[in-house]
Amino acid sequence: MTAEYWDGRYADIGATQVSWFQASPDTSLMLIRSIAGASASVVDVGGGASTLVDHLLEFGHHDLTVVDHSQQALGEARARVGEAPVHWVVSDIRDWQPDRTFDVWHDRAAYHFLTDAEDQKRYWELVRASVPVGGHVVMATFAEDGPQMCSGLPVQRYSAEGLAAAMGEGFEVLETLREQHATPSGGTQSFQWVLAKRI
Ligand SMILES: C[S@@+](CC[C@H](N)C(=O)[O-])C[C@H]1O[C@@H](n2cnc3c(N)ncnc32)[C@H](O)[C@@H]1O
Image 1 (tube, protein in one colour):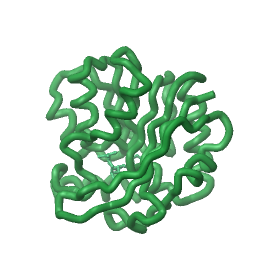
Image 2: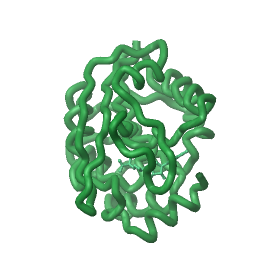
Image 3: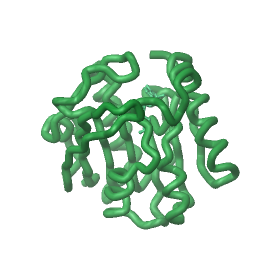
Image 4: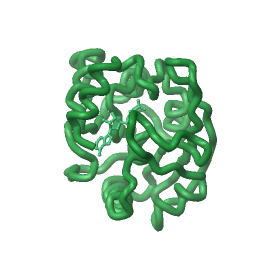
């Protein structure tokens, strides 16, 4: 779906009312902090207007990148954190060609929109190229009992085993966990998390 579609979702609903909003992204922070200190470079892929970057800045991170095709979403996050040292990249994940690597690759609820097998394969090739051996991937998708759609779009749901299989070679799964996300409108969404090491 186009970036304009996502710009519209953020503008019409509001960044704190979209179903995926979290005032405090606790599971992301817990998993990232379990494997990386403040000197680690972190990229939040499909980060949108997430507050993750605010919290990582508070913890002292100074090499942060947020990638999303929605200019609206990145603009809202940027307005929040001001002149903080964050690299904002407006790009479709499928076209993004970073010219550097990252210690931690974080993706909450963006990868699951890639429902085309070729797009999925290319995504993991990009992760393999962007995260050196010893780096980590922190990933969340809708779980197998999660919603079939998000923001009006179809998603691919995963079990922990399914996500590990999708990653393919070059990753060792360190931890998996499930989370019931409470949406701003009072619903719940079942998420599957995987923390993996690049090997
Ligand atoms: C459900 S939201 C999750 C946002 C954020 N990760 C969070 O947890 O708050 C999905 C995000 O992925 C972005 N997105 C979806 N498909 C994308 C693509 N192909 N390239 C870049 N961003 C994409 C959307 O613009 C949106 O910000």
